[in-house]
Image 1 (tube, rainbow, N blue to C red):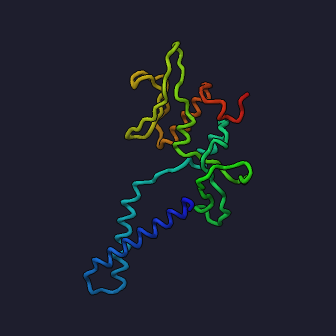
Image 2 (image 1 turned 45 degrees about the horizontal axis):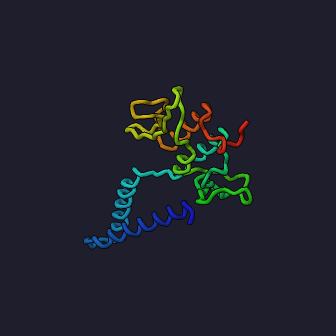
Length: 193
C-alpha cells in the first residue's frame, strides 16, 4: 500500500475511533446536531495532538532534485516519487517504497532517499590535514534543529554544517560539503571526471 493511501486509511480509523468514543460517552438526550458538534470538537482536538508529529520519511522533491544536481546517482535512491497525473496539486506525487529501476522509471519520476539510505551514503571515516587522524560524521540533534559535524571526538571537530530544520536537510548539506571537499564516494556520483 502506498504512503498516501496508508495515511488515508489511518485517518479513517482515527475518525471512527473518535466517533465511537463520542457515541459511547453520549449522555445527553440531544439530537444529531449535538452529536456531530461534539464529534467535530473531539476530532479537532485529536488533530491538534497529532499535528506535532510530521514525520518526513524521504527527501522532499526539492531535496531530491538538489542531490541529483550535486551529481548523486539516482540509482542510489531507495524510494521514488511517481507522478499521479492528478488534477490537484496535493495529490500530484505519490511516494513509492521501491527503488527506481532503469526499466520502469518514467521521465517524470523523481528518485527519493530515506534517511537510512542517506546515512549509508556517507563515508565512515574522513581524513583531515593531520597524518593518521580520521574523523567520523555525526548527526546531532539540538533544540533548534539538526547539524552534522565531522569529529574525532565530540570536542575535536574538523568541520560541520549549519543547524538545519530536519535531519534530511543536514544530510543534504553534509553530502554537498563532502562532494566539494572530495570526500564523497565516487561510486555514488554520476560524474566522476
